[in-house]
Length: 247
Image 1: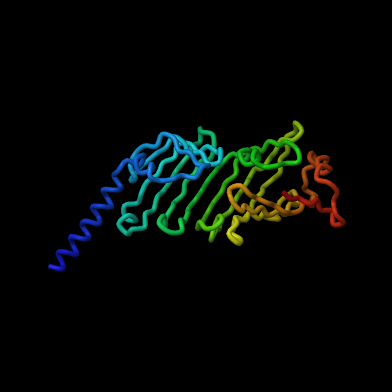
Image 2 (image 1 turned 30 degrees about the vertical axis):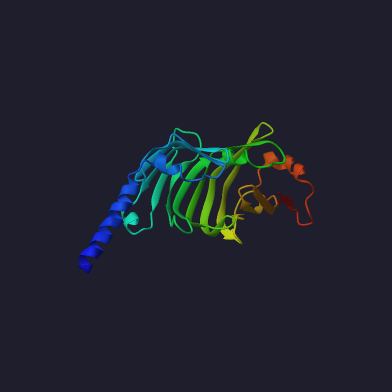
């Protein structure tokens, strides 16, 4: 009798999980209070497979968002969702990621995103107006959410063909890359010193509204001649030939 009761409990639990998973995702989302900086439009499908025309995060629009729930993960009571978004012919970011541990510390893994460099440049406070060109590739191996931003983070950022237009002149900057980590709950982005600019810089994202950065620019022999006149906008170099950068 106990054996059949156990089978019945397992069957009921599985049935209940599958029943919830087949409910319209648009109905389920009505019970979720999204942050004020997130907007979802034209949400369709079920928890198994859903799509949204776009998701806007703090003004950044992510087009054609699709998600798929892993059946096996649902049976193990650790829902794992694969999300894809964007496209080669669309504006905004393009990529994919996997989200798990949804009932505890949400974990993001296998995240690959490509986005226009100018989408980032437009949000920065720069000494002179600049337009950034080409794409930046972001790879996240593991990101565990925490307070205020993260508990763990490992990843890289690559701007393979970096270039900017400043004062009506386009300048090639060479390869730029950075490592991503988590420091005291803040997201840290540290630029690799192996670059043609002589740039050493670390940016910290403390929360969705606060970021800071510190570093130096020490022009190397490979520093683009076309932008040397712009160094005066950075102030005076110190006794080591470095220009202080901070925000």
